[in-house]
Image 1 (tube, rainbow, N blue to C red):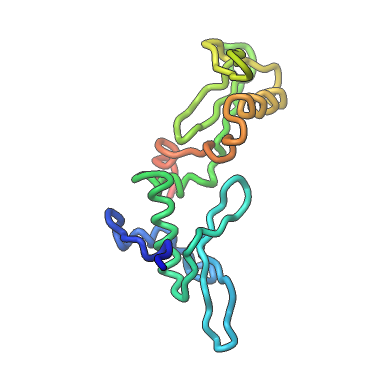
Image 2: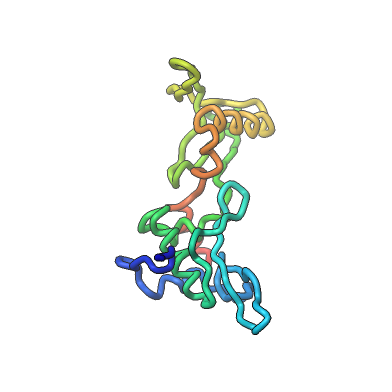
Length: 181
């Protein structure tokens, strides 16, 4: 029976696991955790990804070698986010929302990064059966708290249950992170 770790690694360099290296983790890799230890002293490792605030085990990626689990994790990131997966991984802790005061618009405006691209929060209009589409008008809020609530409502109406999975930064933010390091 073939498992996730048996899949060919075409197009993925072998040194890509270095992006996941960490001295703080027991396994030596981010996202690779100890599953259990056998009475004979052998340790089994497991790869997990965090989606929507909860950790999910990658199917078929248990191994006695943490590097194999890291390779499975690299393959998952590469299939999920494409060739820019290291940038997405580097920007995973950066807040995907922005609220700022705009003198030009006379209030607070909000923005969200959807799949790595900045999207201004606009007024939504209802079109055909619970389908909400953005209009050309920028949503302007009286306070920062109101902007946060408006941003949350915008995400729920526009993206629904997908909102936690598609809100992340990459691209220009990663460049700023690289310059700061």
